[in-house]
Amino acid sequence: MSLTQDLRTRRKHRGMTPWELVKKIGRLEREADNSACQMVAMATEIDGLRAERNQLQADFERAAIDYSGALEDLRARDETITELQAELANRYAVDVLPVDRDTSDGADQATEPIPVLPTPVLPLHASPQAAVTNPGVVRQTSWGRDVETRPPAA
Image (cartoon, rainbow, N blue to C red):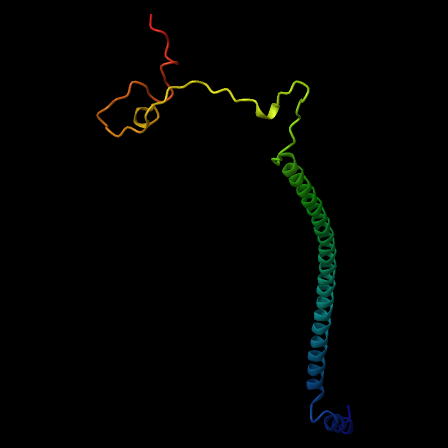
């Protein structure tokens, strides 16, 4: 290298020597390589994130379809339950139905007497189910046992 080339180089490159220029160029090449590697890594990461987003979007769409199907099933079941409740309400409704009357023999079926079994009338305090007010009194019968349910004495 001649002196004039050296002077021109220094003037163009702000007074750097050729060795300083070589070092600066090497440093810039390494930074460019690192930036290229970072861009490749970022592009790879973007591709991975894009694939994950697409997968999540597909899963979301499938879940939305399943959800709408489940809602339709629930609506159908609600309608079925409402119908069954109405049917049960109609089935067990107490209606006063007209009584079939047989007028051929003159007896009215609606006014037949109800048989009344003769039972002795007891005062309330003598009833077997009355509460014991005097703890010193022990009754002959206890709950679930009565005179009729005892085995006959031999």
